[in-house]
Picture 1 (tube, rainbow, N blue to C red):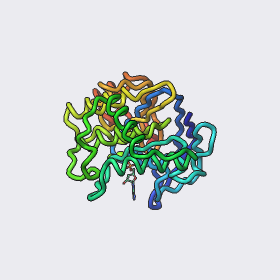
Picture 2: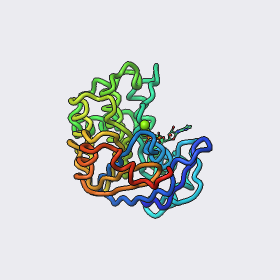
Picture 3: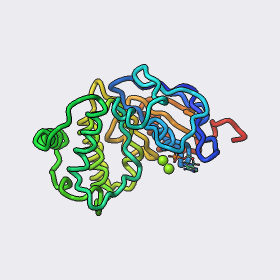
Length: 252
Ligand code: ADP
Ligand code: MG
Ligand code: MG
C-alpha cells in the first residue's frame, strides 16, 4: 500500500529525514516510535503533503502511484489521512458543518456526488454507533474549548467519516489521561479493517498497550534504526531511547 524508499527530507535548510525506508501493507498497524526531534512528525507531514518540506531524494509510492507528485488535497482524496499532533481550533465554525465540508470536498475530488444534510446525518449516526460515541461535540465550534481528550476524539470521528485507506496518527496520545487514551485506542481498534492501514506515531509505549501494532519501528536521527514486533515497544519502555541512539552511526 505504502512504500517509502531512501527518503531524504530537508526542513528550513536542515536535513531531517536521512534515508528513510518503510513498507506498509493493507490492514497493518505500524507504530513509529523515537526520541523527540527524530523526524516522526516530519514523516507524517511529508506523506500528507504539508508545505515547507523539501524532498531532496527518495520516493513515496501509495497504491502504486507517486504520492509526492500529488497535491495535498489529491493525497487526501486518494485515501491518506493525517491527524495532527496539535489539532487547530476554528472558533465560530460549527463542527458538523466543518466535518460535512471535509467529507464533501473529498467526495468532489473523487468525482462522487456531495452528501446533503440528511445523507450526512445518516453517515454521522452510523459512525457514532461504530465508535460508541455521543453527539455532544457536533454542535460546538471546531475544537474550541475542547479538552485534549475531546480534540482527539473529534479527530478519530473525522477519520471515521473520511474512511481513509491510510491513517496517520501523530502523537494522538500526547497529553491524554488514561481514560481518554483508552477511548482513542478503542476508536482506532473499531476502525481497523483489512483494507485500512495505520501509522501510529508515538513517543511513549502506553498507547500500544491498547492498540496492538503489527510492526514497530524506531526512528532516530532521520532513519529507521530498528524494526520488530510489539515486543520492541516494551524494550524501549524498559531501556529508553539512549539504547537506540547508541546504534545510530557515531559522529551524528
Ligand atoms: P519529532 O516529531 O520526532 O519530535 P519533528 O519531525 O517534529 O520530530 O522534528 C524533527 C527536527 O526538525 C527537529 O530538530 C525540529 O526542530 C526540526 N523542525 C521541524 N519542523 C521545523 C521547521 N518548520 N523549521 C525548522 N526546524 C524544524
Ligand atoms: Mg516532537
Ligand atoms: Mg512530533
